[in-house]
Amino acid sequence: MVRRHHEKHRSGRATWLRAAVLGSNDAIVSTASLMMGVAATQAPKDAILVAGIAGLVAGAMSMAAGEFVSVSSQRDAEHADIEVEKQELAKAPDAELHELANIYVQRGLDTPLALQVAKQLSAHDPLGAHLRDELGITAETRARPIQAAWISAVSFAVFALLPVLALVVAPATLRMPTIAAVTLVSLASLGALGGHLGGASKLRAAVRVTLGGALAMAVTAAIGYLLNVTVV
Ligand SMILES: [Zn+2]
Image (tube, rainbow, N blue to C red; front, side):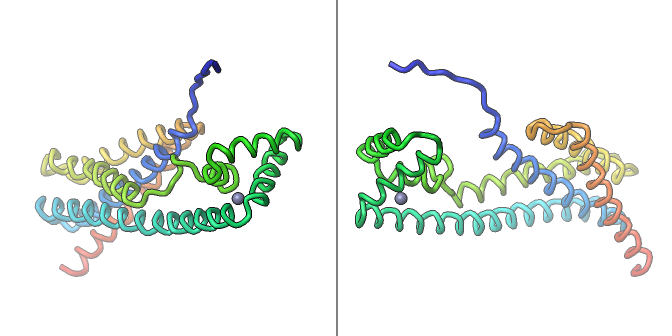
């Protein structure tokens, strides 16, 4: 009986969490900037709200579509690899066994042991052993386009809600400052979280995303202001 030993690993969790945190920056910055641009034209609250919600929906849909396309092509490539591997295993099982043993030799086993490991794993699940050790494909890492699409759409929508809610609660005279403040505080917190998850400096990560967000809002607000002055 082998005793199980558990230790805390961060890397597995960090991958998708970091992706979610990065996506959340996009959602907050793009929605807030859009709303600031419209707000700077002296537009009424309704118009700013519509802009914010339209930005939220458009962003969520485009994230979903983008993720779906990119993860689908990754899945197609995986399927093609798996097909080739299946055919090879059916056609030349001996060559495949030695290929597997060679991989274990490269990872540090001596040749007789590598061959023994390859034989036992092949007796158990030859395709699984080749996919895992030759191609690096496991059940956990398989590409899932639909899942990737809805996760990115939902996380975009959730974070894009922050500047929209800021507008809803803001007093009429303080709309732009409230949107800006909520946006910058959210970006700073998420930046710090991203830095923490990536094992980097929290402060530096927070400052970087906050400055980026401030710049984006300043530029769109300035353009909204200029358009209002020149067009109206
Ligand atoms: Zn193989």
